[in-house]
Image (cartoon, rainbow, N blue to C red):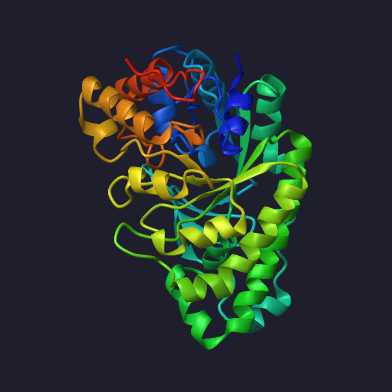
Length: 369
């Protein structure tokens, strides 16, 4: 019988583990508390982790780890948490000098970046990754190293670049008006990403996630032409570096990114997450790409995990396993993250169904009964 780490790595290697692995890209603070209340009363008050005191942060992390253990989840995602400057109850400024508006239901929104034009680059000093930025990884490695997959999530150069200029629209304007500046920014953030993943591997990371959306439900956020010019070379460099270190790396992007799916495979990503059911067909992708890249996700966190009953959750898990798991190369997860709208009972039902229906037979076919 494999452990969680072995299952995740086997699936990302397009192999057949003993059962379909389950893992999530992220749990919001409120969702951790909501799910963990099923296992403990030792929970912090709800709030943003950036504004929690040390005791509350420790309680939140311990609640997440208890949840991982109680539900026997195969891996967990750890992020870089540098010291942020709290501006007010709703705004923070990170160590890159980017100002964000916090959100109780998802990712923070970029309000302002430190680079307005090429002249700002001359005096700009990017941060350097520190071990203190990866305390969550260090803490979890002490508890789970070698047993559950420790996934280090890093912002991709595209996402980090638009943060630095203060928004995606400003980055696209720079594509047309100042491509040299765009490449300079991409160079800065790629160097940081490589530095961060090297430190992360040293501290215990097993798998790398490169996060940053490239598409909406209806179309690409960035044209394939601009992706290949301004993004793909830097992704390729990062992926090559991860592989050189002996690890697997997957790409997270929401939306319909079929126009660049072949590019993502050419770059060398081992997995793609989350195969959003609102705009991507899991069966089509399994048939076309299932022997080339590990498929991750697809359990609907907009409708099924939020509004439907336990039976509907179980049926959706069975369907995804029937489609994507045969022959290996599938990791079951939600279609984005476990946000506060997800019912704790539905999430627990999803995990239990994955364990129940995800066992493989000797031919590499899930035993679904």
